[in-house]
Length: 107
Image (cartoon, rainbow, N blue to C red; front, side, top):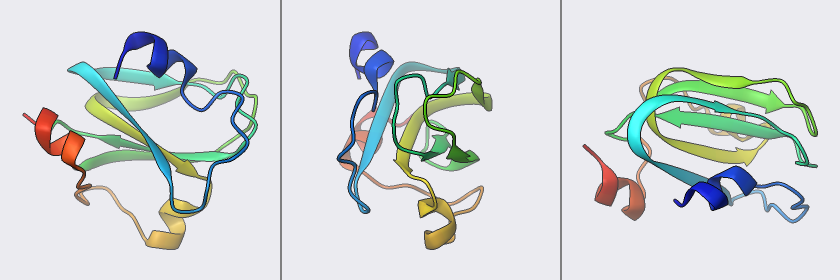
């Protein structure tokens, strides 16, 4: 949840497990843009409102790509998971993501 940690994200990591994720917590609800530079694993990105509801899903982000992946609107959190996870779990817009850090920072 620090700027430097958010900027690094999953860059250079090759050990992302099937049931693990990285949670990004932003100081304020805002438009968020992500990219895959230096990220060797394809990812799904779940963009979450301040209440933890999925507002958009970026599926199968291409490793090492500099293409911008936008939240499409204001969000407070982003969850990155292995590509295919959103589909495998049947995640959709409006679903609620629960995690102690999300609950602590929800608005």
